[in-house]
Length: 167
Image (cartoon, rainbow, N blue to C red):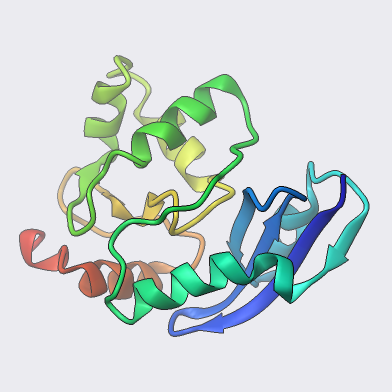
């Protein structure tokens, strides 16, 4: 089955998208060098650049950035270890405009001592934004670690109205 990819501009920078032949989102990553390697890692060839096959993802992201969408309605296919998938599934339960700490995320998983492992899984999230890793913050309320950078994380949390609860 062919994987389809597209790169497009958003208010937070260039993003890479990859979907499978059924339109399920496989990757949504910032268009940096590190992310370019992650984009291709584990994807089934052949990979074809095709904006039309990714248009449904672009449409929902554009709606999000225009404040017309708070929840994504996309089929996603998470590829990772069972632990990573558990972390990413829990991220999907964080509502728009809210944040939790890495420690709270570990507690939700029933693994209170696994804060670092949770942080690592969060950092390897292959579907940024849609699987909202940007909503996870430090226990002290600090904005820590994010593939797009702290300024982008701050921008996304401001966009969602989540920063007022932090400060």
